[in-house]
Amino acid sequence: MEYSFSWGAFFVGALILGLGAALTIWYRPLADNLSGGASSYDRYRLAGLIACGVGLLVMLNLHTLIFSWFFGLFFGGGTAA
Image (cartoon, rainbow, N blue to C red; front, side):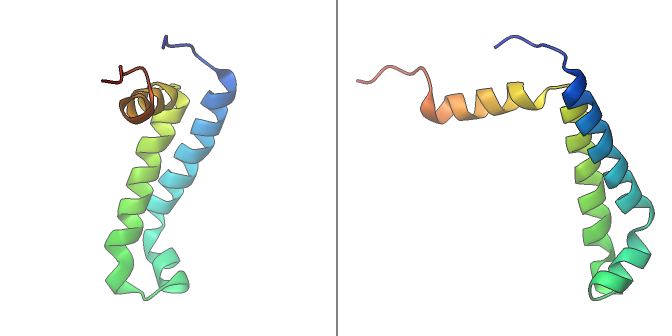
């Protein structure tokens, strides 16, 4: 599969990146209000950082290459013996 840039994926990725950054910045108040408090601070911060990474992948439209490679391992193109 060949790489192609997409403006739609860029804006969706920017939205995901912004939400992940907001979660990374304000993880303490969110963890206090939405779950158990101090015991879940690291989980919220990790989720925010993972969202930032996914947002970058989507912004650059690299998620389609990764998905096609991953699913090609299981479903594609091999020869049956």
